[in-house]
Length: 619
View 1 (cartoon, helix red, strand yellow):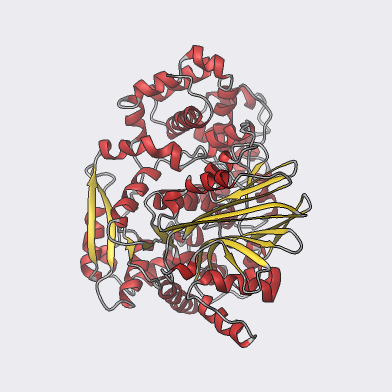
View 2: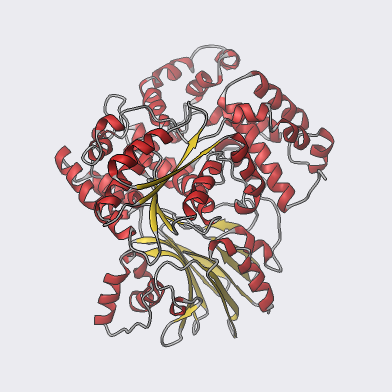
């Protein structure tokens, strides 16, 4: 696990500049650092890496790494879990290896199979390969978007990195805010790929590879999740087949992710997903697995007591940390630096705390990320189910004379159902009312910030549409981005067995009725988990992993909110409408609607980011 960065330019770049770019990611790789540069007729190439050693802790795994014939230079972040199988196949083809790390195998795989190597990798990765003879630079990202990868192009400068910080340090980077993305942030709490907060700066999409040659970018896909979904739908499994196959595949995914030359443990929240992963990990371990959880003094949010009971049953070496508001809010001071793009999922703070706790005993943690998207686990899927059943109400209401005037008097939630008339965006519930509020804050109208990829998801069942939409957007851009930044702040690698591509593809062969059964979300995943842990330990409502935003915004954070909403400074900043911000604060003070607290929190997060990276207008 590492941080990578580099550039290809027609100008000479000082080595010290590349080192400075690389060192902004020290937290991603404190064990080693390396840079490699070359001047050629194709331009100046620079590659750099910060290393967190997981396999082959010796210098043999040092990066940047050259192929044996020195035709390929590469940097790489992540893990290829099937690299030993690929290595044996490559050895039969005549390749030899000098280390026990997967980086060397990755380079040889590219030399043997070209772009076809990416589909052979089972893992999480962000890769940069440079062909020295052709001057071609190739970037690639894993299927589900586990590992981040940004790039910037302006003129003849092409820059890439695991985070935005190295790109911002590139000598000719132009730090211009991509203003349309602010509304995305306010409504969704993150900025969807391929966009970023800066102009000319993009996120690589999952399952994609990019070829940069002679100033031209060409992006291709080596795996298509929609095609896999359609193929899986053609071979629907029986209930028993579904559970048995899930069991076998997930066991293999967990077992492969336990491999490391450093200590490995698990996050254990007490929910279905992390419990199943932890129980399987313990099955393959000769000693107690180390498990970690965060507890809240607020009983309404606390699941640590359940996690401890489950850990006792499974037999893990369990460690928990109870936190209050003060410990959580303390994380805010580091938030803009480690999340160098505005990101307002408030659960990032407890995620950072559990990562800090785990990093004190292990270097690799297994998590349960992905279970909700694959097996229909979110509350939003209940709302989607209701919306499909009640869609006729909105259809009838659209013919009522004067409905445009009447609907303004309805609660936002009901208005969202009435306005949900566009067939291309049926599952993006509540975004319409969020957009209304964001438009007032930014003084814009007519923008469509909904996810256009839903247009291609023509599934009859709206829940299936929404699940696929979440896999393509929310999962990589919010869930996995949050976990990556929170864990790498403490040099902790997090692996997600439920997002093994084989597990994902098998989930598409499971009939939806086995996932969502009479309001029972994740039904079939629960049934599998009950093979390992008694039902009585798990049969309870999900509490989530958030923080009390509404309370904070009205109390401990109110002085900062007031500061960032200063009308004189807002006019100087020229992004937000001062009067609309003041009105949002008043609404949040009087109402408990999540919409207002969520948007005010996103405003706060953006202002702190702006103060850190653009201009400090408040001191």
